[in-house]
Each structure stands twice: as structure tokens, then as C-alpha cells.
Amino acid sequence: MIKDFGAGIALLLRGFKLVFSSPKRVLIGALPAVITAVLMITGWALLFAYIDSIADWLTGFADSWSETWRDVVEVAVGISVIAVTLGLSVLLFTAITIMIGGPFYEYIAEEVEDELGGVPGAEQVGWWRGFGVGLRSTIMLVGMSILFAIPLFFCGFIPVVGQTVVPVLAVCINGYLLGIELTGIPFTRRGKSFKQRRQVLATRRAMVLGFAVPAYLLCLIPLAAIVVLPAAMAGGTVLSYRLLTGDHPVAQNG
Image 1 (tube, rainbow, N blue to C red):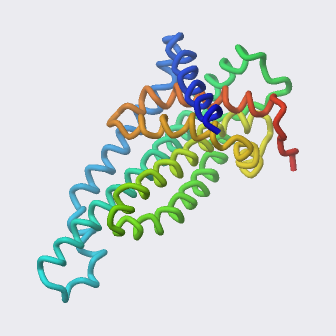
Image 2: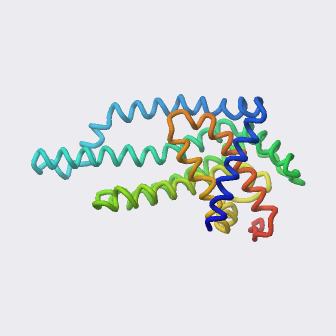
């Protein structure tokens, strides 16, 4: 497990090397991310502008409490909302960027896989197909993230556990989901479904976490995703190539 986790980190570093060795890849990969960044910054500005109203609405059950306890609960809920939204933002940023820049990232994936040996009979994803696949997987992944976020949200109020274990679990879960997103294009080029992608990645969870968790944490840095995402896409392509052409079981089409 430790060896696989380290191998995953190495794949992310390789992604940075593959992208930044070519100024063209950097530009192609960053352009869709810049557009998404503008959209996400606008969304975050609206969230911070109305966070007091949102927290007040979510804590309506505490209206009859003393002012001190009501304020404490509102602050806690406000922080939790921001934390959950931040976690979802990385997934949404990646998903929206991939949907907007499908052809750009398909170009990067194709170039990376050509360097690795190529993909015989690879399917052309195209913008509309990539948008559709990306939208469907986004809905599924965001839905899964919310399902995990709900119990983690309430566990966050548990002393000690809520400040230690819960954040680590949240990062690992969202990181893994990010890893599923970042491998979408190479799997789609091989005609693999979303279900098959999850099955294949599940055979090497530690490797996926080693690759995706650092990428997720880097994307939490404001605007860093603009340069991290293209590298992570390249690293996800290498990860997919390794799992789909190695000696690990791969789900059949259907």
C-alpha cells in the first residue's frame, strides 16, 4: 500500500514534467482552467457575501436558544458550509474545466499516450461527447461527494474527532473522487464506461490516492489549479495507461 501510494505521487510529478516540458501543452491546458477560475471566483464571492444569511437560515432551529449559543452554532455551521463547498469546488472546478476544454485535454492525453506507446484503435472523444460524459460523471461524483459530506458534516461537531479525523477523511474521499475525474478522457478513448473506470481504479486504490490527494490539496491553493490541472490530467493519463495495459484485471466492455 505504501509503495503504491508513493508510485501515485510519482505519477503526479511525472505529469508536471510531461506538461511543463512543452510550452504548448501548458498553454492548451491552462486556457480552459482560466475560464473556469473566473466562474468559480464569482461563485465564491457570492458565497462569502451571503454566508451570514445562509448560516442563519440553516440554524433556524436555534432561534429560541440563548444568543451566545445561537452565535456559536451559526459560526460553526458557516465554517462547515464553507469547508464542504471548498471540497466540492475542486471537483466542480475539474469537471467544468474538462467539459469546457474537452478537446484541449484530449490533445494532451493523446500526446502523452503516444509517448507511452500509443493506443491502438483509440476513439475520438470530441467536444460534445466529452461534454456529455463529463456532465454525467460530474453528477455522479458530486452526488457521491455530497453523500459522504453529510455524515462528515455532523461528525465535524464531535470534539477532537471533528478537527482531526474528519478533515483527513474528507480530503481522502474528495481526492479519490478527483482521481476518477482526472482519468475520464483516457478511459473514454478506450470505450470504457464510468462504471468500468471505477472498477479498474479500485484495483489500485492506494496508487490513485497517492496521485489524487496531492493534486487535490494543491488545487485548494487559490488559482493553483490553473497550472496543477493540466499536469494532473497528464498524470491521470499515465495512471490510466499503466492500469489498462498492465497485468491488473480490466473490466470488459458492456
